[in-house]
Image (cartoon, rainbow over the protein chains, first blue to last red):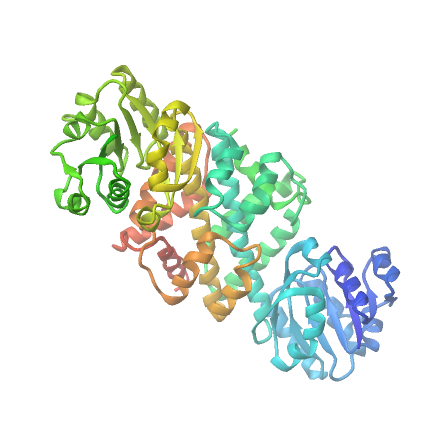
Length: 289
Length: 289
């Protein structure tokens, strides 16, 4: 099976390498060619454009930054739609707009190209270790057909519903995540101002009702002042914009997400967009200094 | 060892029963005598006033609602301070103001009465099953002296620091908890409005970065429309008021807690103060209907 893979970022690159290591023939393209070096070393074939990447592919995967990037790669000049054969299955593993996903699926369908949205969770570590959670939307037959690829890249694979459901589920995931980041940010800011020993506080609360994946995985980083990213502020804000745009389309106000998105913006204003999301604790601290 | 126990609520009553079952001689008092029936059946001796409860006690435990209640019981008319002997150890297991805790400790110390704050987490179930988390503040020697009692009532016991540190840690715990309640409330409200299958969504997100104790323990209740309390809205709001009062004293703004406290107030306005905190999802839903 020939796989096209567009987007050699911190997620896409290790995902393509995992496909290569599993024996797939992989054709890659990305905006900045040097980013494809790692996949090329693992045996990937370089293609100059999205159209050429799709030319001989049975499956074409995109893993890029945002909605306009996916649209350009799939439907733009030298895009996948120019060369993709009838029956090609496109899988978009970026996190983008659910509405745009459905719209692009309609355009692709007119050319006989199938479309699956399959955004991922698990970060760079999950991509490297092939332990991603994959939230897939689309026709069951199409998802079944590409399941062997998903199983090479991820561990927990859920068919969430029709096209767009993967993106919807991913946005729900991001809503839930961001509040747990707020949980540890306001919690530790208060603990610190109260003069508590933070490690003792962590031990007292982390296994009870206050517990969260974020507390377990980012709590000690906050205590140690380690702001290196498991997930970057810039990407989190991008995702929260998608959440709020989608919630607006649904007429579902989310005041909590709105607040956190604004506070996250303060980190970007301070030039800290490449810090990890746990840096939100500093914004809360700054409110009290 | 003779133990006085004041406050036979949904927490205090089973805690006193656990002490009785462990062989302690327990003297009880509570505002509404009928609430002491269960402890009396287990062998507790009824006392008409806090003063009488403290009269022969080596250790005097309070587990009542709020700061004024603890102050009345310990320092008010017919209060513990009137009869407590020199060397009596008072343990307040209510959730109240850290500042008031330190002030009451000073008054008690003038009479030679020792004071420990030891608020609890784990809810009615934790109290019944003797699996409470206990966050203790005070002198190490005093805490060591009452550790056998703590071990009868709870499982994870942390000495958080000097007097008041237990309450501070409990308030940090409540900050962290409330954001995880917001996490599942906004998350499920969005998922529902998006037309996602909620159980599938739960399965896709609960074991990853979105995971929390609240998602695991209250998520399915939301999906099933079960609003019975693990922890009541009225008590959550009471605790959030304590958090915000204390944060004000420290000059540490907590905008997220402020927002959630206001939204929780909407449940009280609707007469739903005795629902479980997961009912917050209905407030978010109402914003979108």
